[in-house]
Length: 222
Image (cartoon, rainbow, N blue to C red; front, top):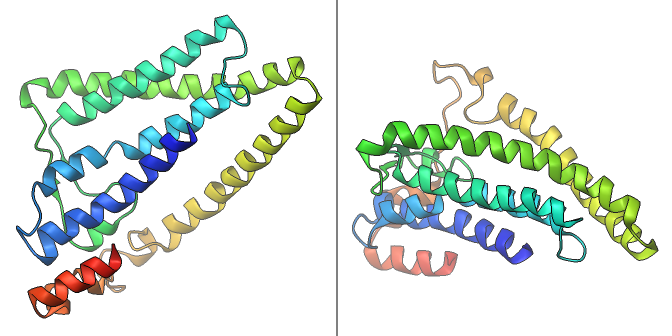
């Protein structure tokens, strides 16, 4: 599960840079940027589901009891349905993990989208979202159930997991309101453009000068 989370984080943060380079910096230099961005878009959900599965399976890799396998399979089904629905619903990809694409003024239409499946896809997305919310709550409950049955070693392991989850939750609680209040898209900046949105200097074609410079800089960033 930890490799799944790390892989989703890596793919979801690198692929937007691929799209920015292929669409904004040097158009046509890299193949299929729209497809790459479409494949990277579900990575935030996959990473979050990986964390939910860790809560269900930690520390021995098994659910609390055979009855809790229902929650495990419901989580897997929810993420599978949500990922497929995200692919097939036609939409414009504007951001993935952060607002890097928005800052670089890059957006693409999902090349995998099927217009005939728009209504069904939206319905599946709603069902998957509610199912993931339910399984997330049950995953937290499973930790308390597991704690009652745990031996001293597992008690210690669960305590460390609680610390990590608590720190992560505190970070989200603190940083998310700050991002809403002071971020580039915050209401405090208004719609008059009094606070101009900074776009990445490296995403500007004039920044690169020549194709050879672009190649060198892209290689160094990689």
